[in-house]
Length: 95
Length: 416
Ligand SMILES: Cc1cc2nc3c(=O)[nH]c(=O)nc-3n(C[C@H](O)[C@H](O)[C@H](O)COP(=O)(O)OP(=O)(O)OC[C@H]3O[C@@H](n4cnc5c(N)ncnc54)[C@H](O)[C@@H]3O)c2cc1C
Image (cartoon, protein in one colour):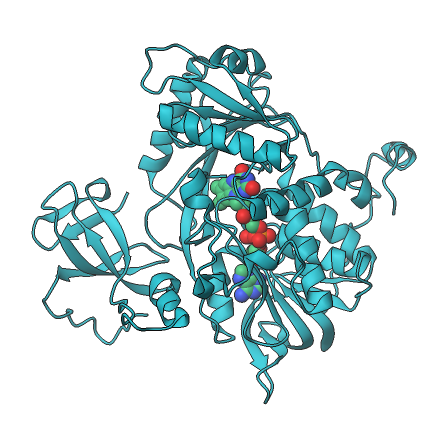
């Protein structure tokens, strides 16, 4: 089980959280074509390495937050509140 | 070398020391007509059918580890074809028909055992959705039966049909043609048969790049063993599909999640068929060795760790103990995870890609073992003809942009 640090509540066990998928996926414009809509809905980076994600502390404060996690070790590198800018990860990029 | 009663007898006299290697391990040639990336059951089957049925024998299978070491060797081997939608029924039943005489065709015992797959309904909603499956399957000519709780218990003694448990059994479907097979033997059998037809099986060789010509078409692969030129490339790498296709500049509608399984200590025969429960996320069968083979659910996040959360397996064991109280004191021996390539509609992607000469077979997620012969056959047909086989056509990569999803997810909520 993962140990996840909610930016409001602190470190809590994974069962309190719901993974909400890749972060920063831009919605397609209302008049976008099929390709663009499919890309926004379905195409994902599925990165092997550092991946930016959204999580929600459903069985806690209920709030969404951003995270960067390594998908081979499953270790969280950083979590931060929505609206705050991403912490400096020392040049380690994501996506 | 042909396996027969006589060859077994002959080798018994030499204490089975003289069996030859079952497939060749050649150095890669500089060029092939077709290279298949990924030596799982699917990739090996594709190579075999290319050689055996489509007359294309200048073929290599390139595997980064050892053949069958991916999900093929990690799965719970449930084989069935009772899916809901017509496209899926055609796809999975195509595979099931190939399973039925696969051991004879390959001259290798893949231990396909059609002992019946029973799927338990626990709620009114389950009953409605399973009956819908039942009727759809009958319309498609796929064998299926509806069982009362008593009939389910008679078919699989030991099943707890008490009414006062957390998830009582209120009915079940049964596909008698479904069952299990020996996962390793499937990979080995296809490798052996393909190798005998001239296919080169190259293990410990990781594909690191896809080379494309000026017109964008595939011309070869970069591998840890050097560059290999290829006229056509078929990618069949399950959990790592996003990475390999990314080398060719193709983004996929896939996310890779850990999926776990576990086996118990060997027991006397006790679970006579495959029992699945989608509602409580548990499925169980018993291997010929006597181990109970138990499958759990996926983790909720993308991962390549090949391990999953302990709470997931604990949850599954809770469910198994409720279904089979007699198993409460059985001890578990091993637990492992595989990385499954999941699509939004829980249906696979099989066919051509925007890159000429590049073909893909992926997205089988938690349920592709059962499709091994069929997926291999359809991928081979698609590569040989350069256009999708009719059974594979609905599973094209472009269905997402066309909105033609084949939504087995919402329809069935099936794990396998
Ligand atoms: C725990 C678990 C239980 C399951 N239970 C069932 C079940 O009961 N029934 C069912 O039908 N399905 C089940 N599945 C799903 C099933 O295992 C898979 O869908 C199926 O085995 C996929 O076969 P494959 O040959 O495509 O993949 P794999 O066997 O994973 O083969 C892909 C191969 O590609 C190789 N590869 C990856 N990247 C590269 C590279 N860059 N270069 C070269 N080679 C590469 C890998 O090493 C691997 O050997 C289960 C899966 C898991 C994990």
